[in-house]
Length: 225
Image 1: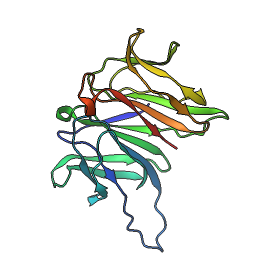
Image 2: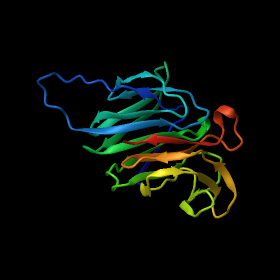
Image 3: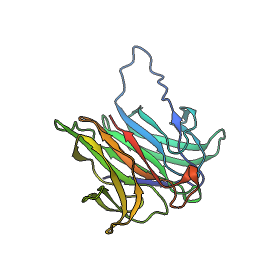
């Protein structure tokens, strides 16, 4: 999994709608897609500027995501501001490749917040299969295994800020446990997860181990297609 990290001093990510300024007679620019997820448990919302144009309409709150949004491919200047302010907490040039799909996660506690950018492989699953990946985004949780309940690990020894490639699983309903890596100790028992044939999912660990109700250790599922 390709990962690009940026350090944010005091932020988290955002909900936005990209604005096109193209005239009707202009050729459509080459585009990529991005999906932004707020995975920093104690951080506030932010505003986003792409090439110095503000594109969000509302701040994104933990642990939500924007869904895929179009962005012009190439090198884009990305600024992130604390919501409602002009204070940029990140100012970076990021390369987005034509027709590629990316997920951007705001991660860690607010005092150490950072971001990872991951390229998403949205190749269609084989007949009867779904694709699933796991990303560990709980700042104070140990490395984990993700296993079918009372069964073998599907994903093994995933540490904070690490993730897996998409893996094929038979469509169906699963009971999954997040275990302390290499043990049978269940850190988090996930509710039933139904995987639909042809769909692609990201499951990420969220929140703090021992955190308050709103920030407690848990899991979130993103449907990528």
